[in-house]
Image 1 (tube, rainbow, N blue to C red):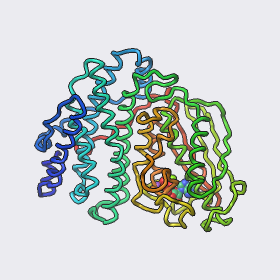
Image 2 (image 1 turned 90 degrees about the horizontal axis):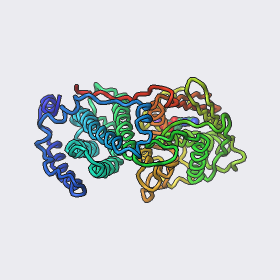
Image 3 (image 1 turned 60 degrees about the horizontal axis):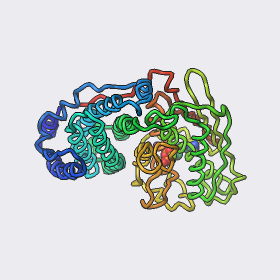
Image 4 (image 1 turned 90 degrees about the vertical axis):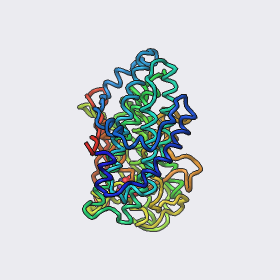
Length: 461
Ligand code: ADP
Ligand code: K
Ligand code: MG
């Protein structure tokens, strides 16, 4: 069902769409001014044909990671491969964007009229229209232009998860969605499928943008030999920094297990998961030991008195690698064990606020783009490139509040699990109430399995 079907169901035209689309025309033009592609035909009318539906109904070409690795090997030196990779992305992105456009059209009217959701819709539409009109990539020069355009689109989508989460949260808080929908389940599944498809769009786009870079131990954005000890060190250093900024103190981290293990993985994905899990562990330890007890006020304990967080690396067999992150931070109550996996669920604000938090940690309207866009930006844009760029994981300086945020968005656990599962791994928690939490982050060795990206079907087809 396209817009017309949608509008018929809602028994009225969609004025927001008209407004949105006239805005889009302008936005699309501003993109085209920056690129060689002249897309001055992006007009409101274009929405009313069946283009979006047509693209959304096309079969998505799913790549296994093994294919990505074997295809990308030495591609930097092979113009044919680079062009083939560009054509793949050029074919795939419009289909995938079209599917998500259809999802948005299906939202209840009251949700789609939310300004944040409209903004997301606009951005998707502009990208869809722009990318689908790019002329076929025939030469490396074509590819260079396409790559520039791709980069612009990735950048312009970076704040969109924030906007979507804010929009959904506003609707949720006003209880605007029909009673027939279970709120949490609805928002969770909406965010999950969108974030998952966003991860895959960005993985294939970034893989192409980096496929022509010659970089030791990298095939595109995948590090073929990621040293997990380095990843842990890096995440520990960053987490301690933000913990000290927030509480004035941070527990030590003791690392043990299989030293020297390497794994083929996208470094920023692993950085992100370790960072989020370590933040949760450190926050629990500090908050539960304030004044010697859970929920006390004021951090006052020297680090030596805080029980350390343990990270154990288990190389495992069966092609897996597990990180066990253990804290003595008091654990998670049985009543919360399910809730903690909900997008946006946080206990920040329900306890006493952190002592020196300069960020607005208790604000439910904090930025949510962090998790996703931070990760993908770290994949290659900006100064940090593909490296161990936790800097690339951080929100840009100059945003309100602290540069780093210890907790409060409620995205850390569900997003980390989504990232882990994206490549066939998983994240599980074991809690002993009153004692602490063990988090088990399992990664699959990508080269040893025929991993396939998960692609959400268009909900309208
Ligand atoms: P946030 O950290 O922004 O609150 P998360 O999704 O990372 O969001 O975590 C959700 C909630 O789960 C936290 O607010 C906290 O109450 C609980 N939690 C997560 N990890 C731990 C842990 N190691 N110990 C105790 N509670 C935890
Ligand atoms: K959560
Ligand atoms: Mg967290």
